[in-house]
Image 1: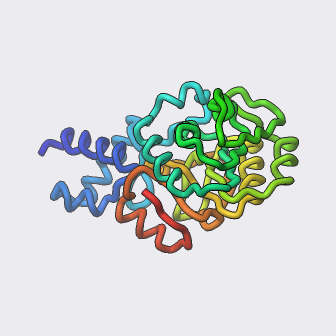
Image 2: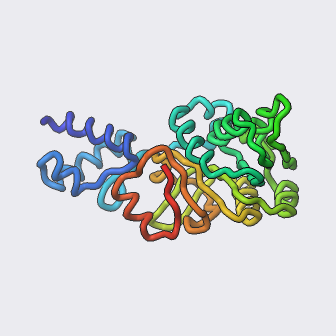
Length: 254
């Protein structure tokens, strides 16, 4: 295999799995670890990945720069699978909170279609707009300062309203998770504070995320991994991710 072919394959693997390890690549392609490091250096120089100690990760995508309306069309099938997994946790009589997350748009569709006898609290406009017909599902909308890019309300006034409630379950959006440093990220500080307030008001909190977010970072940590009851994703993570997750007292659903 030519070096260029090997490098193309490495980029495909990083994009598919989120990360790669030098040792594993060396064994896979039957070349020295030094050759792999040179490949990774070249690929990083070309902006195709980011080198890390012992490997490389997918370049961070700043999804915060995209409006919710732009993000809704991305990874739709994965989001639907995550929503289906989250839906299985709901019980009649639950009072739940749906955080600002495009996955929660898919989850509320399932809830409304099933006409579940639960109460849904949210600060996301798209979730609220799903209630267009009479339903046994009750809506509690939390207002505050409108953030148009996030399609919802965040900030101190929102947080004050949230703190007056006690939710059975909260379903939270995340920008990325760093299992090595025990950090769960978002980008905006106001959004982080509101997410924290929601979790503090909830008996159980669940991350909703595609597997690729295990290798992404944000600008602001809003929680530690063990602050969550569980992580709900679309498919089984890699063995490396599962090994790291074993160090946390947290459920993994996929």
